Structures are given as C-alpha cells and as structure tokens.
Length: 342
Image (cartoon, rainbow, N blue to C red; front, top):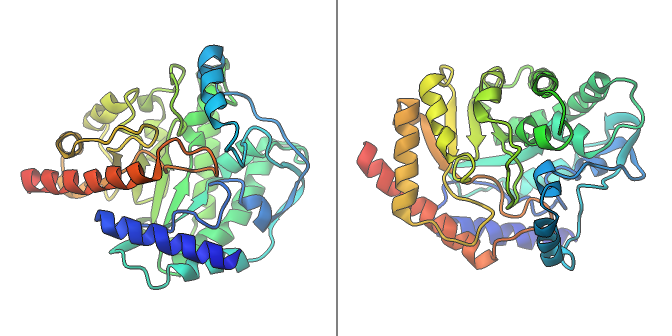
C-alpha cells in the first residue's frame, strides 16, 4: 500500500507541475476522503452513523436517481454512513501524517499545502453518540486536530483547513431550521478552529469553505453574505472560496461591500470542479480580474479551483484527462489576468 501511495502522489504532483501549477499539494492520495481519514488517526470512532441527505437533492428525486445511478458502481466511500463517535476523541499518533508530509519534503512547487479537516466537518459527518453537548464534541475534535495542524505547519507546509461545513451544513444538518441556529453553529466552529490554531502563524493557514462539491441544484445554499462576517473572524491568512460555481459566481461582489480584513488573501475558485467543461483561459482571466477589482488589490487574489476534483474515492465526476486540461486553463487564464492587472 505504501508503494501505491508513493507512486500515486508522485504522479499527481508531476501532473500538476506539467499543468503549470505553482501552489500545489499531494492530491490527498493517502486518504479515502478529505474527512473520514480522521477515524484512522483518532480514538473514539466506530460503528456507523447517519447523515441527512442534502436538502436540494431531496427536492428532486429524479435528479438524485440520475446522480447516484451514475456513481453507484464506483463509489468506495459514502459520507452518509461514516463511523460514529462512540468514545473519547484523542489523536493516536502522527505516523500517518508524518508519512504524508515526508512525501512532499522535496516539493517542486513554489508553495506546498497540505489539507486537514475542520472540526465542524468531522462533527457533521461522524455522528455524535458519546458527548452530551455538541460544543463538547467540537472541542474534543479541535484538541485532537491541533496535533495535525501543528504537525503540518511545523514541517514548513501551508495548512489548508477544509471546512465545507461552514456553508454546506445549512442545507444538510440545519435544513429547515432557522438561519440563526446555523449561524450559531458557524460561530462555534470558527471558535474551535481558532483554538486549535493557537500559536500558529495565520499567514501559514488557508480556510476552504464551500457549499458541497457536487453537481446539483444548490437552491437551498446559504448566501455568502450571511456567513462572510463570521469567516472574517477566523485566524487565517487566506479564504479559499467557490466562485466558479454558477450558483455563487455573482457573490464576488460581496467583497466590495465587506472588504477582506487586513492581511487576508482571497483564493478565488475560477475553475468548476464538478463539470467536464474546460473553462476558456479568457473566462478564467475575466473571473480573476473581477475578483481583483472587488477586493481592490490584485496582489491579494490567487487563482484556485472551487474544490478538489475527487474529494472522496469513487465520487469524482470529472475525467482525469479533463482535470489536467482544466488546470492548464487555470494557469493560462491566471497569466492573462496578470498581464491585464499588472
């Protein structure tokens, strides 16, 4: 298995370099998903939990059938029935993390980032059967994840905290409930992230927030402006946001009304990771110029993708050859935007 992980990591790193990517990562090749991997690194998980279906998908059973009919034979992991929390949460050891980081010790990228799950998405996906209060469960997860966050940054890598829960959970765990209840959850999660990051230089941390990396209606998504001020409270140096998604592309204008905090950078998603349409470089450039104008400083905008292309093994909807074509378009579009802006 170790050899397979090494070979897969080397392959995706080489492909990123070939596409012109200069801020890259290991493609999470050692993990079965962006979040359930924590169950192998922490105590307390076992059995099976249950997670609600996304509200927008439940509204359209015909589309749901179409979506899962295409995925059923290749799905290896499902986030709707992940292991539950049945005991005390604690980080068991850093062996797996150190092995991942070691594979990127001689990275060819100008900057290399390593992903780690947010306390909120861990709590949302892994149903709590043990802790009396949600706040206690989140605190225990954050305390355990602190080991992972520090382990990544201590190796000189950028830490990207993947926190789709800060938007996605509005139409999953909080579907049909008052918006204020969801916003209270966001505040709680942001607080747990900040606690876990105590002592870490914010400039070494990116926070990735999205509404779910799936092709679907997204008609119940929380507006970005509702969560924007709360995201600004995170002790991080960059926000990584889905902005190519046609449901949210217009929200780039929110940065005109509520500017980024001083020192914070926007990694603007300008490539949709759920479609096999390859963006034209001119479209990418237009999106980046619009983001730079909204932020007010092009040096505080970085081109990125909306999310990962296959965040859970077997669920990816974009053909591998088209992943690299889309990343080449990202590079070309970023170069065009740089020429216009600088």
